[in-house]
Image (cartoon, helix red, strand yellow):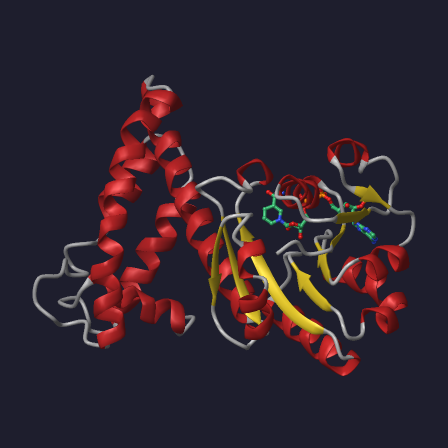
Length: 287
Ligand code: NDP
C-alpha cells in the first residue's frame, strides 16, 4: 500500500530516508528549516513545503529526523494540535529519557508514537548493512513495517520508547571502545615503523574473529556464575605486558590501563581465578 509520508528534517540522514520513500513510490512531502535542501528530492518526485504545518497535514505518517531532542520540540510543539490523530516516528538520536519524554508528550496529545535509533550511515540507508532499532507503539511498528523495511532491517524491542535508544547507545559504546583499542594498537606499532594501514590489515580479521567470544561471555554473564569451566581467568588476563610495552613505545596507557584497572579491581576482591567476563562487575559497581 502506498502511504502519504511527511519527512521533517533534510539533513544528510533525513534526505536518505526521504529518498528511499520516494523511490518506493510513497507520496512524500518534505520540509527543512533551511530552504534548498529539498531540491534533489523534488527532482525525484518529492513535494517540498515551506511550513511544518503544511508538512504535517499532508502526511498520515510523519517522520522526524532532526539534530537532537531540543530541535524536535522546537519544530513539533507549535503543530501539536495538527499532529493529534496522526502517527509520528522519531528517528532523531536522543537519550532513553528523552525518548520516553517524547512518548509521554505524544500520548498526552493523542499522537501514535514510535521511536527509532538508526544504526547506519546515510549512504547505507536502503542497503544490506543498515538496521534501525525501534521501541514505542507496537501497533505503529506493525502497521508500517513494510515501509520501515525500505530503510534497512527493522528490529522492535517493545512498548518502552526508551529501549531502542538504550540499545543504540550501548552498541555505540562497544564500537567506540573498540575503535579506541584499534587506535591504541596503531599507536603502539607506528613508532616501530609499521604503518597504520599495515596494522589495519591484520587487525581487521583478528578483531572480527574475536567478536566470536561475545556469545561465550554473554552466556556466563546471563548465568551469573563466573567460575564455570573453560574460561580465561582474570589472573591469566593481567595486562601488565601490554601496559609496559605501550610505555616503552612512549605512548599513553589510558586505553589499555582502563581495562587493566577493571581486571585489577576484581583480582583485589579475590576473584582472580574467575573468568574474564567478571570485569562486568567492576563496570556495574564503579570504584
Ligand atoms: P545533519 O547535521 O546533516 O542535519 C541536521 C538537521 O536538523 C538539518 O535538517 C537541520 O536543519 C535540522 N535542525 C537542527 N536544528 C534545528 C532546529 N532547531 N530547528 C529545525 N531544524 C533543525 O544531521 P543528520 O541528518 O546526519 O542527523 C540527523 C539525526 O540522525 C541526528 O539525530 C543524528 O544523530 C541521527 N543519525 C545520523 C547518522 C549519520 O551518520 N549522519 C547516523 C545515525 C543517526 P537545517 O538544514 O536548517 O540546519
